[in-house]
Image (spheres, one colour):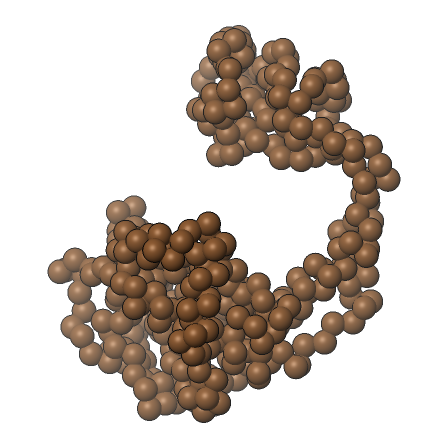
Length: 358
């Protein structure tokens, strides 16, 4: 995983929490993986944060069962990887764990002491946090040792990927970073008339003096990107509608437009920044595209390898989890449960770069 994200990735896995009394299952063996076992309590501890949230949302019991089944499949995968680590002796050393944690702190602009306090504040045990880092490092070593050599990327694939991404890019022109507040009324709105929507935008326009105020107004009633405070990001001017181009053209960076009346309501736009657009060359993006394609291909190989490993290993789900297994996901979904960000994060940003470097 990219270690800048490691703290947020591991947080939901490490929070010590227990289900309420009526949700507890009698502890025992949830599954046997070759000669190793997974305890019911381990699965329930792993799933507890998600389960609490789902129950607060009154999620159906079948959804809870799905989440528990996902958690068990994740733990089965952990056991399989642990067995491979023992066989290959690709253990993560204490020095490697220390170096990785120092990198996490640095990438989050934290001292080691601040990182530790953050971990404790989130209800995590520091030794458990280190154990999760150790597991991720060892998984990466296994992947690099067993799978990396199978992945071959042809130059033609990179060229095709570049063409699909950039062949339609403009030859030049201008890019603009915009924020927008758009209030709609009438049939397009949620009860307000067009006149009421425009009145709201004019009031906002007259009272906005800071970026924060713009964002607050956008989050409250804008129909465009409210979750981002109205931030539209960077766009080429060729992508803008004609009315937007007219609004943006005379603006200086940081300046607000006047209120623009539209058939469905009113809008006000802020130009954050303007810059010349220069087409992205193949040479500029080749390395990043190669790494992205390598990562995707590596994950495909990993999932196939894990499926084969499962097929050659004695795996028995027991008791409650024998019934829950009917809801079990494929291996990719199980890995997505673990990271919360998709199975690609299993490998980390370094998988396609320094393959043997954590």
